[in-house]
Image (cartoon, rainbow, N blue to C red; front, side):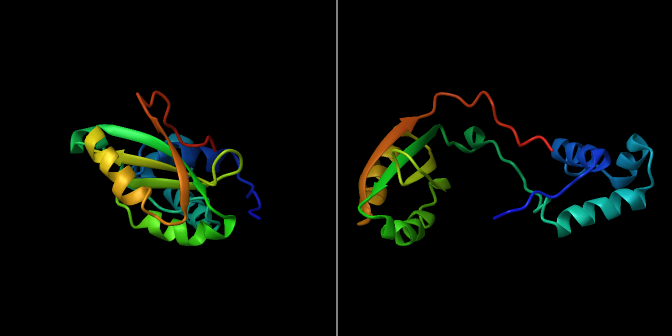
Length: 153
C-alpha cells in the first residue's frame, strides 16, 4: 500500500509550476517563490526520490496525428485468473493507451485511440475479441474530453 508523502506549501507551489510547464527554469521558480534556485533543486530532487515526481512527458494532440476516435471498453474475462495473460495481450495492442483493473461490471477497463470507426471495428473484432481470455466487451465512444487534468498537489 502506498503511504502519502507529506509536502509543504513550497513543494505544492513547485509542483503546480512544473505541472503547468515542466520546462520552467529553477531560477524562475526561485524568484517567484522567494527562495534560492538551490532550494528549488533540492525540493524537486526530494520529490523525485520519494516518487511524487515520477518523470516528465511530452503530451501530443491525438487529433492532429489523425486519431479521431477515442473510446472506452469494459472487458469481462472468463475468470479472474486470466487477468495477467489478458493484460499482456492488451499491452501488445498499440491502440490501447490506458488499462485499469476494476471492480464492478468489468474486470478490465481500457481506453483506445483509433483513426476511424472502421479501424475501431477492426481492432474490436480481430484483435481485442480475439484474445481467448476475453468473454465479452462493451464499447463506449467518447464524444469529447472537456475535463482533462492532473490531481491537485
